[in-house]
Length: 433
Image (cartoon, rainbow, N blue to C red; front, side, top):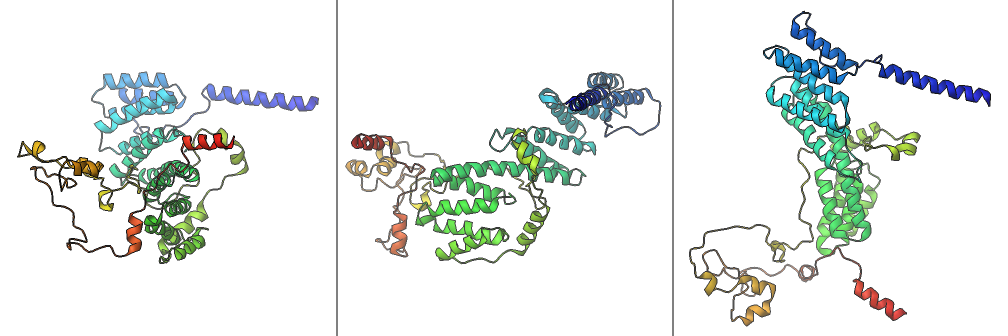
């Protein structure tokens, strides 16, 4: 027992000594952008002194020295280096305030020196500022979205820089986190039975982030959501299952996806050889979480990005909200226009003479009571009624291809509210009592 206490006391003493050594400046972190020119110019002496303080963790002193250099020698050849070192001092200091100040200084440096090689490094540091502050996929995605934009700027603005490949990998990792968040939301709606909402989330996910590590599972849940939304979404369900077979040939869901396609009487595509090689490379080089990672992963603040892709081109556009497939568009006979156009009205009496086309669209009986025979036809900007839509009876358009297609189009639009209303549940409970 005594020897155990001695070992504990020695361990604590060693930890305290290491902390004191670090705090006293014995551990130095070399600065990445020193001036190697051997000269004793006053501005160079000030810069070297600031770098020495920067390496020893004396950030406030380093900033005061750099401000003296920039204010005194405003035509110095080291002015750009001093401004970059000033931003680096905030970046090294860290913390929410320090990182915010560092981002502002890096942005100023890029604005004043856009052609310098260090501008790419400054933009990469801005990307890392938000990357380090990212939350887990089930939490706020503000920092992840900002990191995606900033890392994309490195690849777009500085494609030939040495920082571009690293920024591209960071972009894949960020998009892995964003895709995981969309995946969890989509699976929540799927488990709840809100299949239109699940399909909308998952469809945007698989289209925007094909490099996502669980994209095959996302396509499977997407196909299942479309299948449960009715026969009119049969083709969309088939597209999701076909994408698993074609783009993710090494997925364990390939055999089940083929069976689904056969049951839907849809063709089974061949596996893409490029996708096969890419997926094989990803599976061979994917980092696996160890025992400690599983035990203490919940205590980690940031997300786990080890499953992110190591190859492939990341998405160069941000994820935009889309119109759910269950929304009745005008092309599907639902009467909802997706585009609004405007034109100058030449006849000022059109509103008094012509009926309101919206009245018949919302309530056909009201339109008939208004004494109009073509109330359902929308009015054109000049006040005249538009021609009635072509019908099979008038002979101007062919009829439906089959009775099955007609019955499919007449089916009700799927809804996210699959449960019974609360009133019905209450009545049923009263009857049972």
